[in-house]
Image: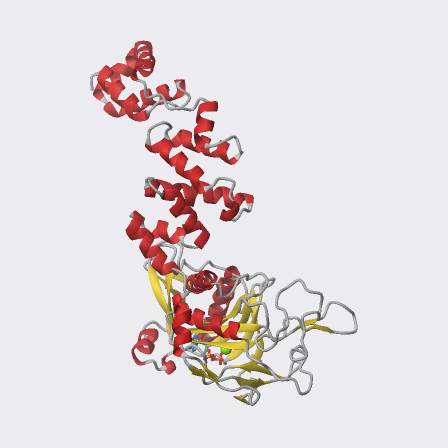
Length: 518
Ligand code: ADP
Ligand code: MG
């Protein structure tokens, strides 16, 4: 197995007994009593990209003063009636189509009853038995370029709650209802991920798809995309039996870790939780199904509530809302607006430009990056162009904190640089220098080459003089090359040194071979 995905478990003293098994099966955790495997299913909450809330016209978006984006509906004033926001439904349908999922033309909103200070209604409007989107799938790339499929169970629409603020006053808790009533899509996966890295890769891919679709901004720091992570452990073979029969009794009891909002925390939470469960099971205990919280400071999960304490939500259809009935023609019309999605784009980049799955996979992470590449690659060597976009340019952009749209070097700039390399005007090595100067604003590729005198010396006459002088000055080396032809590299190096790296390596090699009689 490659480094990267499902990498071996790092040891920590407390869990010293759980050592990674072998390089060939690092999904397995070696316990004291034998090997264990992890099973993971995720519930991802994605805030719908929308200017207004799910059932009111109040504005959505961070930045407003507390309680400045709250309609009477969001504040749950008596007698207020919710009205479904067509745009939010469209976004959910679009997302369903992007996940290759079943779109349910008949769905329904239910009340999920519970009390929370930041939920003024006393219930959340959600979808329970009849979600707007049914089964779909997401194809996920591992770091080594291989892929696996995560099945989607459902996607439903629901309201977000407000925010309790505990740090404003020593004696009081304040409430900010700006977020109250904001539309969320809850995307529930089947338990198809087998290690922490796979779970993180799934969320990454899902995020990319949502951003392509324009249905969620994917801002995890703001909590606009967050995951509830369900973790269980089982013995080898049990998962395969589950997949054959779809009978959950083959799996271990799961614990759900709520609201994890970074790839790193997702992985840390899973690794901690799996070890915790194994330790309990190996000591003869059993796992009780419960909801847990991840504490990044302590790098551990803590119990929030057990199944016994779980709420009885007393779901029932919201009598204020009619069933949501979609016109199939409307769904078709939405389908027609879908952009080229990451998987299709990746396949096309591979077919059209002959790129590797890896290169294509890196380019499609952002639409803008793929667009930049396609513009730069027009008429140029596609592989060489991909290298410049994914390596040198990407590194510079990351270091400078730039989005590719704001790159100081535009696609035409990369194209020109690649052209100069292709035409032998500069070597790949000199091109790095040219690139840095372009980045620093010294001019276009050809301007930099001319100004700084970086044009590659392919002129045999000029090179010949240097080669002759070198051979004459180093008769010993010249003689040695005859027995050991690889030693020609020393001469190439010397010529490069004398020309400041500007000699055309092909021309130099040819000349040296002729002169040294190889
Ligand atoms: P709930 O609302 O009670 O959390 P859901 O069915 O909506 O239940 O979601 C359950 C999530 O837990 C799904 O993502 C599912 O794939 C996952 N899951 C179910 N059983 C297991 C298990 N044994 N191990 C890991 N994940 C599981
Ligand atoms: Mg859940």
